[in-house]
Length: 68
Image (cartoon, rainbow, N blue to C red; front, side, top):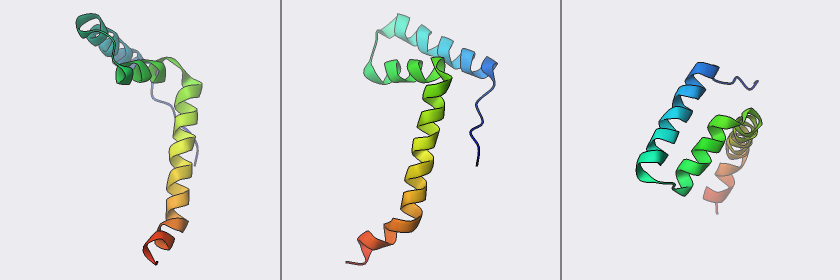
């Protein structure tokens, strides 16, 4: 499986949406993380890798916690 990033125009649109919200209502921690996500490709790639690793772990180890 390979990381496939979103098209740049969709990323830019979502970033602008976040910035508009921030201008209207102020900064909140969740919005700050979302803004970072939209700005940095490496951040998105690392986050994707993390989710893939969690899913892979769950595939092989979830049954162990239920068999006690």
